[in-house]
Amino acid sequence: MRRKLIAGNWKMNGSLGALAELDAIEAAATGTPGVDVAVAVPATLINPAVERVSAVAIGAQDVHQGECGAHTGCISAVMVREVGARFSIVGHSERRADQAESDAHVKGKAEAARAAGLSVILCVGESLEDRDAGRAEQVVTDQLARSLPQGAAGEWLSVAYEPIWAIGTGRTPTVEDVAAMHGALRARLRELAGGEADAIRLLYGGSVNDANAAALLGAGDVDGALVGGASLTAAKFVPIIEAAA
Ligand code: PEP
Image (cartoon, rainbow, N blue to C red; front, side, top):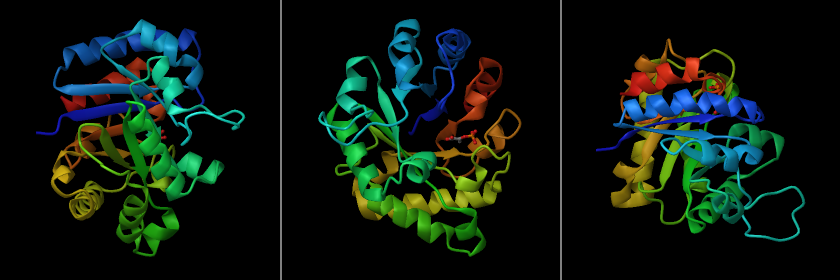
């Protein structure tokens, strides 16, 4: 009942010229009608990307928790929605680390995005130290509990499990570890979001590529992927979309 979602995250990469990659990504999205395809581009590229493609949901990588005000350099959910964004990532581990974003910030950002009419991909994930100490499931499900927005519902919210040590490193957890974590997240969601829990998509993110996508997407309770490096070119991203079909 949950459709697969393959979402790209271009991070601080891309240019107007790079938007040409979206053409083949859109063709793949059109060719796999059972899969939702999305790309979070840098804020400067949201509007040109929206004008270029329609079968790929274009989104932001972050939004501020407020609507407007004295926050130099920040961008609100209302602003990205106005230029055509359909969703925003919130709580990516790079922002949690680089901008010291707390779970409370992330919850506020998710609620602001929802209020502005955006869908949300909420990221959670453990450090290598937490994994090695055997506390990954506790850390990640607690992070979820503290960051989950009010009124969480499958219609607009996905949760991405992204182990920090797997992002951009070429390392991934085993399929069994991914399935176990997603099972733990689903169980915690049932406590937190009641009847909506089974409608909320759980994505895996961290070094997904064309070689490992089918196995990771086949793990229990994995409803899609959040893809960084391999989303930058259609040649690498399209096989991941096709693996989800
Ligand atoms: C990410 O940044 O969300 C991510 C999963 O990156 P990568 O696929 O490059 O590991």
